[in-house]
Length: 73
Image 1 (cartoon, helix red, strand yellow):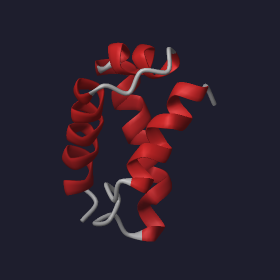
Image 2 (cartoon, rainbow, N blue to C red; image 1 turned 120 degrees about the horizontal axis):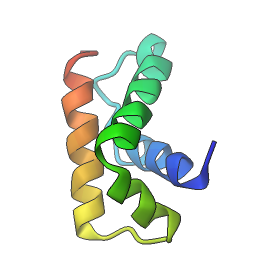
Image 3 (tube, rainbow, N blue to C red; image 1 turned 45 degrees about the vertical axis):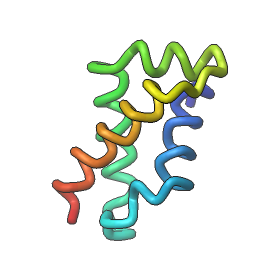
């Protein structure tokens, strides 16, 4: 897994963005989260690859995670 994707997953986990996702569904969430970032937020992954975690990047990571988490609650 590319480092920028690892950063996105670790960020979601350490910021409590998976709190409403049942443990049994975490892998499904992870796959959907990364797929969404790859397809719709390439700029976010590009910034993470460069080592940039700006407010804009954080906002996008949080928004994608929150939107997806609703479907797993």
